[in-house]
Image (tube, rainbow, N blue to C red; front, side, top):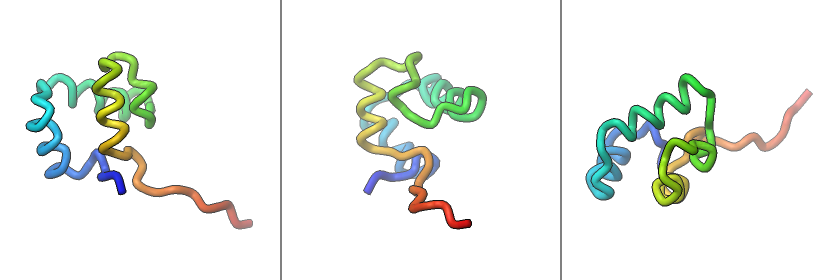
Length: 70
């Protein structure tokens, strides 16, 4: 199961492991909160390999909709 991108501890471990610069996290947060992008692959300001790594490790919305009940 993928971790939530908003799990600070897991995200910080990812940042250290991949040696990400602080501005990358700011870019991601801007995409999510300012631009309403919830798919890492659509964050074209990020390098493709980073988008793939993020997509493998994290989810932005940590739940799935089973269905809509009326």
